[in-house]
Image 1: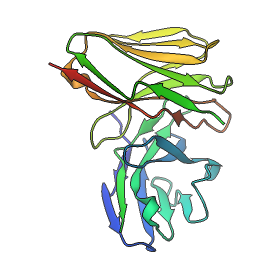
Image 2 (image 1 turned 90 degrees about the vertical axis):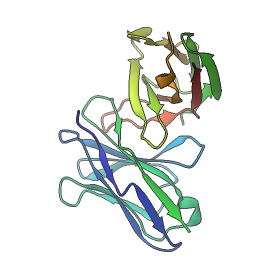
Image 3 (image 1 turned 180 degrees about the vertical axis):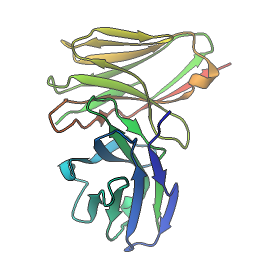
Image 4 (image 1 turned 90 degrees about the horizontal axis):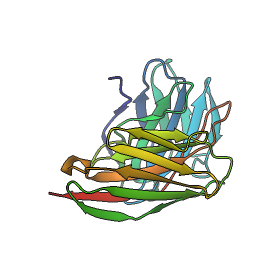
Length: 112
Length: 114
């Protein structure tokens, strides 16, 4: 069964450093999303991406965050200067034209 | 914006019993309601979904009901098994031309005791 693949599974970084989280969507999917889940809390929407541009972003997704699909396959989330409060599990999710959203296994980001 | 409330936060049932998880939503324009199961260390996995033009949907031991008037929807798991133990999330969204974003409930930890 096709899967959304995320790398790395764990990322430890120092505060102020840049991190890039990577996602390989399911091959025929057109809509891409990033969500995050702080330990023990809700899964929260960050950003949606379609046709090579951001469709919608949440208030969490400030100027420190960016997304791109540089090579037509990988979908990346960059955090320019990480803060302690960025520590969370980050999930990539993708879908076709219908609403069914498929999630990857996540990247656990720890900012020290 | 949309707000989704989910209850209970934890639920323990005996193997073979039924489990019911309830969610309410605030935005009457929401028209798509999926349920996700999340096992430890994994991403949310879609287990069933329902659209607002349907009142009930069933898939083997899992069923979802939707009451649009009251703006609530529920997940029903019958004949629970230990492998049903996980965190379950409800979500709501408004389908739009550029896509839809899901707003999640806080999750329910389901424990099935054997």
